[in-house]
Image 1 (cartoon, rainbow over the protein chains, first blue to last red):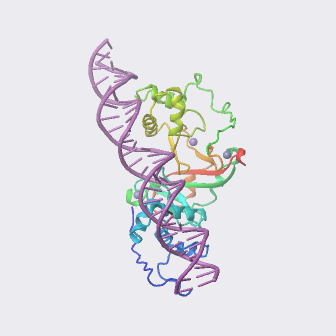
Image 2: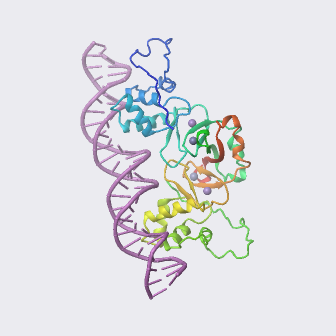
Length: 161
Length: 161
DNA sequence: TCCTAGCCTGGACTTTGTCCAAGTCAAGAA
DNA sequence: TTCTTGACTTGGACAAAGTCCAGGCTAGGA
Ligand SMILES: [Mn+2]
Ligand SMILES: [Mn+2]
Ligand SMILES: [Zn+2]
Ligand SMILES: [Zn+2]
């Protein structure tokens, strides 16, 4: 269920030497976090790097475990703080597909839903057709001002079938 | 954070008074639990009674608090055990609309989705039109055998607007 | 009525998350 | 470059939600 990120990501090579450099494997999430007035600490950088990618939905403790491999002294509290801040500025989203730990998703800029394997828990980002809100008729809205719909699709992935 | 639901919501004229008997105030959930080979204890009866009704979505601790009013010595462990058993036989369902405690819903026999107030947390049962699964095209299924879709609609209830 | 498998209980324990006082440091100012 | 300072980080205490267990209790059949 877990896949190992083997990117080398040597911070040694002096980051923003020039705008033209654009190093390989540079974190997209980290890029988005620049220029927001954020104090860039080693801890925040590592959390952003660990959480980068597609179909990534890690728990706080998974983020912490991976962060420790790069920065052994990073604390659990800092991971929670950093994730919470990134959520509040809208650069990552929280996903709660089960009753367990919340998961954190760097794919915050393209609205999407989730497809979860009932066997192994793998989560994929999916984009259903149409507006999910349209399926809820006014008579079923109980006077609410409905503004969003979250959909969790469930089934078995190819490996678990 | 929790607010009391003051909506009147007369369920009165809805549910077919058809099958003749329909006893007074007898718990419908409790009725369903009879004849399943269940040992009927005072604790289980109280949990079933507390959890009965429409648009009911209580946490385990809320169930425990209400059960204690009728049976002061009932333990938290028994409430968890009983809820877990009722879930496993399909007489109630678990609902996880936020990252907090799971909620328990006696409306297990009519498939439905949930409409949650972002202000006060009130949860209503709703029935969207059409099959939510139909909105997910094959190209977005990643080879999964998709069997279910859970939808959480969010917005502000009349009281919170 | 008696027996006993299954149920109930209090408390220990785990997981997930929050909060705090004290120490540390990134980044602008000089 | 060095200084300053408010923001960030840390370890640990604490809290909420849920699980597990040994021992006592009891519903319901014999
Ligand atoms: Mn996602
Ligand atoms: Mn419901
Ligand atoms: Zn799977
Ligand atoms: Zn409300």
